Amino acid sequence: MKVSSPDKILFPDPGITKIEVVEHFQRVAPRMLDFATGRPLTLQRFPRGINAKGFMQKNAAEYFPPSIERLEVPKREGGTTVYPVVTDPADIAYLANQNTITFHMWTSSAEMPYQPDWMIIDLDPEDGDVAKARVATAAVRGILQRFDLDGFVLATGSKGFHVWVPLTPGHSFADVSRSSRSIAGMAALEHPEDLTLEFLKKNRNGRVFVDWLRNGPTATVVVPFSLRPRPDAPLAVPVGWNELEAADPDGWRIDSLDDRLDVEIEIGPFTLAPAAIETAARSAGVDLDTPHDRFGRNS
Image (tube, rainbow, N blue to C red; front, side, top):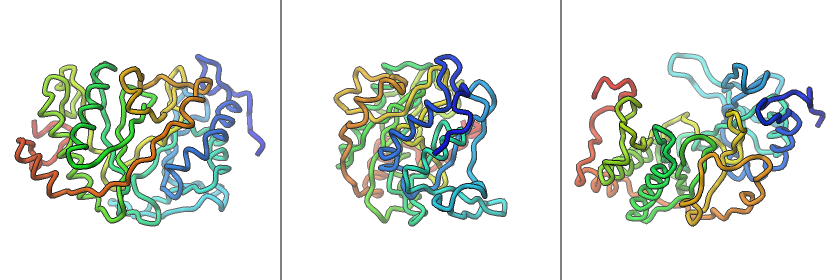
């Protein structure tokens, strides 16, 4: 593949060029597809580099090659979105050549769009407190294990960590959303000084937001090994549980990636027990009935 404008600077601070970005994605594409193959994608593109305004692209462009499949999804307000779906490593590189910096994917596949096979818990420290983010991540795992579940850690390349739980086929979004809200609520109740379900940053008071909201239809999560549009070009990478205590969420770059490519994350998949998880959460005092309002009108 010929890279257009190969010397264009996409990350000005470290001086990373477009060809370096494309070569990165060529290298990691097989690992990315371990997670993203056959899934609707949203592309975060920066045609003039990350210091200029970028955009999120949900619709596959007409000029995308036919090897990039399409999934047409109705929109609530009418019309449709036609998502790109990738199965070939060469198409990851092609999309990088379109100035894609970050790939975001659904938690369900194009083949079974209403049956998520990942549950995601996002640990978001309000003030970039990495130590507290580590505590929150470990706390979530402890609760998962009570229900015979487990996951792997993703250092997001941003402020916090994700916990990814692989699921067996057949779960509904309602079950996964309810279960993740229950797990997040139990974690927050057990660690009230460090964790919160408060969406509004002004009300978090330095606590880590245990975000369960990535578990609904069409919600997305960053694809592992994607770059992030931050000044020093960090990567989203998997981290072993035995590494969490020393891991930084934004601790890896293109030139320090070697130790991530072989991280062992083969676990599960697991079958949720939504009724048992919800019963335990209610017994602990978790409010599962108040509708979530990201604007804080219920607080």
